[in-house]
Image (cartoon, rainbow, N blue to C red; front, side):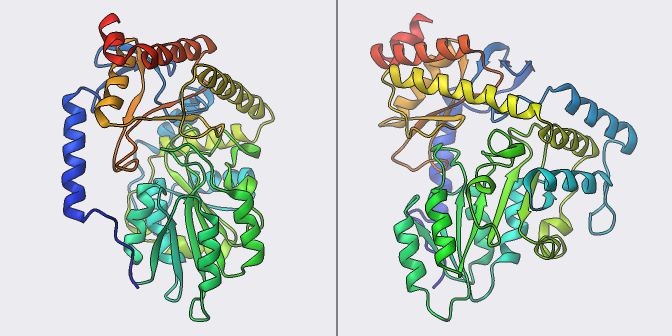
Length: 409
């Protein structure tokens, strides 16, 4: 059995995405140009707006140590180190992987991006006799990577339905060597967590089960030394592979794979296509990432995580008190409000931007067709006053309608 096909054919999906994004662009909601930024405020097409859209949840992109790390690497190694890592690598890779390994407690392979981590790892990890089960809301880059292994059975599972996963594990016969369950640690467009406790229980009960988790949106802001949600909440880890981002809360660039053994890490490095053929990370990016990894290992980083948790809690309490119906109540930096139609979600985003708050529209294929959404994020850049003002504006729009608010701004 091949990969389960979605409701949309490939051609129809392209047409649908093009129509939606063209509509968003004509409505002035996407494809803007950024000006200067201090992190808390962005200049968007010449207009200053409070930043409630960045995935830099820890607010590290202007941290002095990251800037110095990038500058020193640029001076030492130049603007580029243009040769495949298979032949020769910038020594900053080794230092970064060692620091990340200490922070994450496993073996780490740095990759050019999280997407390329998936494209490198999954075709190497998944064997000819394996069964692959993918959460329907796993990141689009996961689905892109599984397209490369469509010579094995690949099925979509309803979101976070552990009962369906257990059923498929029970049904897997002797001809199935391993069952891979692929999911997100924190779902970027729903902002809920994977069911880690239930998955850990299944790992203990079913030796065939292996997990591959895209934890890009949990890296840095949660877990000891910022190792993320999956590595903090799953056990045992001997059959768990985690992909993370170094380009979001981590404050630098690139991605990384956390693997249970050095042997598996080396196999992905030797055999993963993007590890052989894609371009390396620029030295300045590696230098900033190394500085960030070292910052993650210091005791004061826990205080920085605590600052973000306080802002998330403040936002959650305020949004609940305002009667705003969020997609889930999970305490993550990503906030999502679902609407009945694309025009309704567009109108809210326009009204919020008219009031000076930059947040984003989210529609298919990022979210299901029937769940057009307004997506906004909380970061250490956000002051409590700005969070309060943002919530008050959202509440006013909910009570009086976005058209009134847009015209009043």
